Image 1: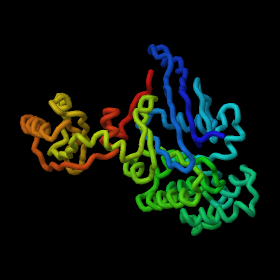
Image 2: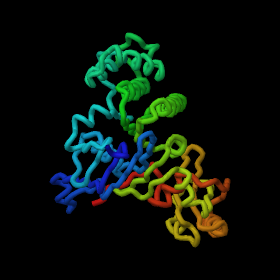
Image 3: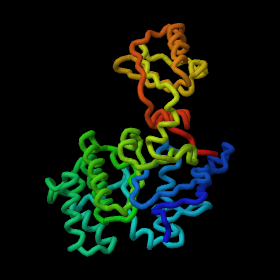
Image 4: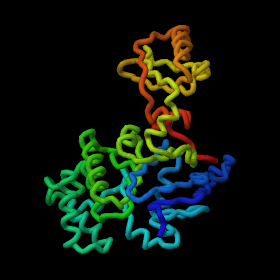
Length: 337
């Protein structure tokens, strides 16, 4: 029996491109390159990366929906290629953009259908279905067809579906996408409660929200361009930038940031965001030393921009991600060619 709930060994996945891409000289797309992960039972493990980094490809392989080009993936010691049906009995997945079921069925009917597909007797599944409907607030829509629910409520049903089968390993791929702040908070609370009640279960979470990953994950891996860039606890990852200084600057106007600012002495990473309503630009600067802030502020003044606000902040997972990948989590990335 494996000591890991989830294990990947030199996992690689290559996609052949269509004829138009080949005409442009692009022969293949490497989505994953030498991915090695070891997730222990009872862990809530996070996978962070921008769109196109390889997160969803990794999850699809682990869920037996996609075969690796090379390497191996194991769930509870079972090979996802050789032991497909044994793996599927012990896993479940929730994706933020997935359909929640059949629109002509009610929420309860959809959840019952999914438990029956897993071969779970209704007398066992019924209490779980009742609990999950209450957890996500869908008990108030008893008898209402799913196609009459809003997008947010359908996403709650999608989330509930993942837990009704009582999985050994659960994959949550952007589970709070489409939820309001209160609903997302309720989801996080329930996940932590469920993990406490299922000490041998394992959850692999992908998220675009750094605060969510920091709050929930025991350990996490940062993946970029199909490779794992770092893997550790949130606290230890933040130590990678603890010796550096993080500044948040607010500048007037929405003009483009001169590229030479990124090359100033002492600037490790520099990213920006535009607030079109306030007509300001936010600069997030990771600096090698506190003294480097003077160079950056002088460059701002010489560039004719007015400094509206300036503050030093504690390092976050966003800073770690910025240092390792050169961009913020929400930025798009092209896969490795």
